[in-house]
Amino acid sequence: MNRETVLKRNEEIDILKGILILAVVIGHISATLSPPPNYDVAFLHCYSWHMYCFMMVVGYIASKYGKIERNYTKLVIRFRRLMIPYISWTIIRGISLGHYSVIKILLDIFETPLYWFLIVQFIYELIVFGCDKDKVKWGTIILGGGGLVVAFIIFRTELLRQAVLYYPYYFLGYIYEKNETRLHTVVDKLIPLAAVLYPISMIFYSFKDRTIAVKRLKAIMQVMGLTNRIQELLVEVAYHGGFQIYNYVVVAILGSAFYFLIAKLINKHCIVVKQMLCILGKNTLQIFVISVFCYVTSFGKMENWVLSLVSCIAVPLLLTKLISNNQKLSKVMFGI
Image 1 (spheres, rainbow, N blue to C red):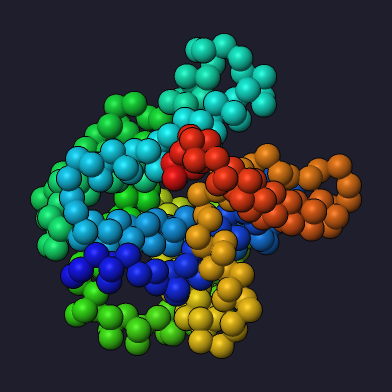
Image 2 (cartoon, rainbow, N blue to C red):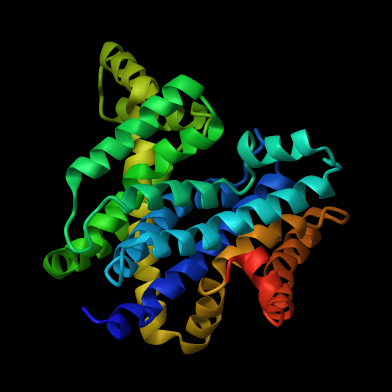
């Protein structure tokens, strides 16, 4: 595969990335205006699928770009693209919160990373570096995943928890791209079915509070005429692993399929929406790192929502335009 073919942008992926960064922004606004445990519908909806799908897309892109070259120069480029913005914006965020000491800033960078998505992505890039350009090296993938699990068991940090949680989804995208020619037709047939099932699957989705999901499960079991003993057994199973598998696997994959189908439909039928989402999709990193400074909380809830959403999209795009005129600043802020 030649360089031009690989570098040609996939508009469906850009549209999906645009939808994803919108979901990230909406999820963050929701968490700010309706902090836990008072999760609103927007928060639950976004967090049921968006980061899992984002990791699949990132893994897919990593595999595609890995076909151009796989040397230490590429690794340096990825460090500059991911870790330099991570460090720069973490320092800026820390200073904005009054963290002026070197120790406090180092803790922001390594212990409680706000921009965890960037550093986790770079960790995955290091593992991918050990893989072949054209084939999946299962040994490398399993060893990398096992290493992350062991590291999490030893150190128990939030960063490593995130790295373990999203690892399968990153490599799901990575493996799919390696086998896209064979799997494309099958996946295209399954996506509409999965998309139809996603709204239904949300009936039992529970982010952290499983009370409502348990009530709904019990109501359905009662309608089915199951005995109290069987109901208690199924609820017990749900509490001890069932909900985790359901939330983190079933709903996550169905939600990803639902929005991939939306992206495909927009690509074919909605030119204006497509153009807008492609702009967002090409600036996901910039929106991700800057939007955390743009929440509005001084007015009524609806006004805060609208102003925050507009601000979280418009301000990053405007700043990106201004910063891009300065090559050195652009490298430091966005790794470009």
